[in-house]
Length: 171
Image (cartoon, rainbow, N blue to C red; front, side, top):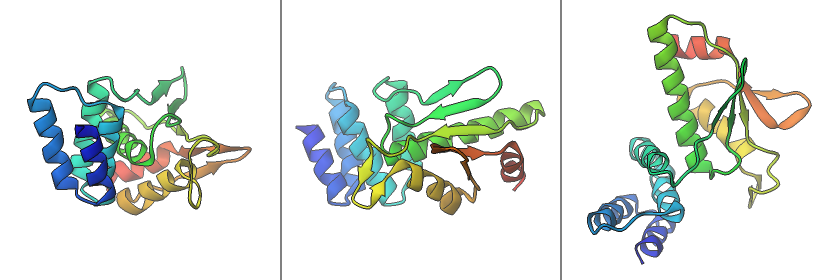
């Protein structure tokens, strides 16, 4: 199947072929599923081809294959990554942050603190421990230069302050 071939490309570090197979699959009228999109996004993410990874993550959300991660409360935005893989989490969180920056900058509004819910890693444990709670903040810092901070008393969340977002938007 296409999904199996794309998953093999992901494991074999062949993002270009994974992208070609996805295009061929869609060209034949076949619908990619969560496994397919996850493998393509991860292949691109692991190869640090973030533009393609982000594009396919957005596509997966628009096709309703991947759940939206944004939960908004009345005062404090909370973004939940529980159901997402590391690569999808990093790409969709980056997309959401860019959207917030763009919206706030154009509307001349101040930035609010954002809580990101990763969970404590009970369901996303990799070879070296919990995946999301460690790797998503690391990605934001290393790739985007965005500082995050732990939420005291809740190891399954981290915080991006409004001040940090403001500084990031200004850079």
